[in-house]
Length: 271
Image (cartoon, rainbow, N blue to C red; front, side):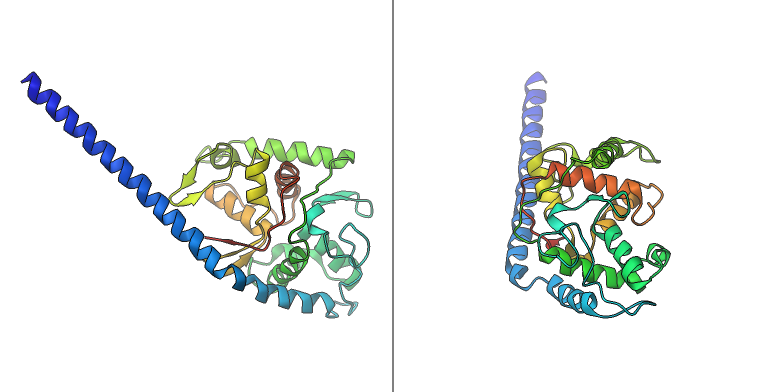
């Protein structure tokens, strides 16, 4: 009887090991296939279509003032776009705020073109004013591609925003008792076949932050970082954050500062 039990236990353990090995092999194979697919379409990233549309919108007169965005100051001086996204979020003296790319673009639209920011805030993603915003973001971030991420915390408000972002990242709540850290604070984690970067370390943060905004193959859409964060809140079953709100900018400040020294690879390609 004991011999049969030992034999059965051995077979059970062997079967378990085989199944685990097969599962790991399947995951590795699928991950490799996804990587190959991304490599295949990298030269024809659909984000290029958004970038081209954004370039036109940047130079197109719009709003009550019938003005372009060509004098927009993204932190490196009025009209300087190249390299600007690599240093955002940052503190702006004219607004006395730390702003990310999208909130800063809203300021430029308001000041230069006379547009009401509330229309942008209230619009759904991928529609209306936000559709234009997504294209402009694609244009701006592409002009930082290959640059090193260089986000400052020299100003007191930048330090405050970084600390707020760190607290928000680790804050647990909602019906699932989730936080950003639940998925993005350990190495080797994944959801189904999706690798989850550890955003608390420089390497993982650079892999995460450095590839967003991105074109999402699964939805066939270009997503800005604000939309990505909005979807994270949805997955955590939290109330959706207000577009361009302090908590979203704080989270981007925490991620981008942690990613300093990494390379801007946006627009990326994501599942």
